[in-house]
Length: 416
Image 1 (cartoon, rainbow, N blue to C red):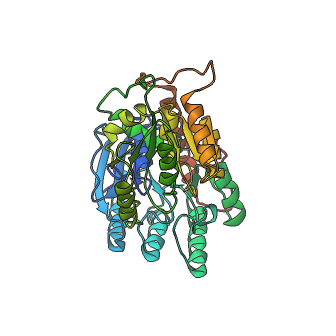
Image 2: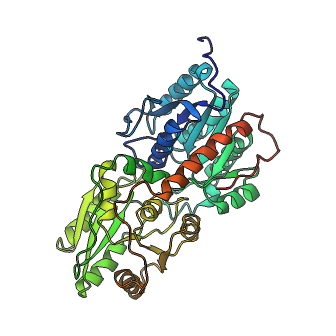
């Protein structure tokens, strides 16, 4: 092992960061990329080494303090062992480690996900360095069946055990207060609430290729956006709901953006079936949207529809909408309501499949009450970015707590 590098300057960290990464937006890669960009620009970070999938590449807005080590592959357990070896080899040059993960973020198989969940614990044990883990969700905080996962009771018990080990041996961060309550009461052990506000939107803002979209044309159709990763958590019957409105003469134009969740590739075929069935004069399927074009996409739409059957935690897509001041109509979901409260976003919630409620919500977007402030488009650096930076700095402050041996004591409470 090489000799240890000199310690970083006072208050400045040298951080190893394990996560999915740009251009990946699945497996929480969008939020991790945004957080990495903010950390690399922080005056409190001297060096940031991202241990990323082999397909990763530096985002356009990356600076010289963000170093990329392409070392692991989803669904490949051997690559996770290689990542562990590389992370421990870099230990003398780092002050601590950060992970951005969730239970199924490493692949489709239970074995590779079990190994992935143990990476933070193994890094902590082998290096004795502080380890922070941003856990986007737990098996106890999700409706797994609605999310498309069919796990045996034994597999769920093993997952809960591994979660408990992570919580006891690292400082674990969650993005919703409800997650903190559920995890501490059912899994056991302390977790820290730090909402990762707007992280998914940081990269798109910093790398935007255009200054933004245009305001709606007077008398034109209402521009409706469906955006994100498509899988069992989203209701594809929303296409039938919107088609019925279009067929009845509602002046709408629907843009469908995003691709299938990599854990559920069969949704590629389902999306293609809908693309063939829906009238092209009312529906456009644009597929994957590059980060540099996301800002223009959101700012050229009038409303975002979120047809979630189940939420996977803090909604990245809702963060985009709140950041770009795009009105949202969402299916009724407790975690989405909590996310909206955290962001301070005013959102219309409708029951799933309720066509009259959807029509009424979209009409309220088209004709807002008098006195409603106009939506800002293409403004300079907004207040939301300051909120995102505060969340990133709060993560850095937690390294001191994570450096202590993890035991039964609770880490200091934080606010955001």
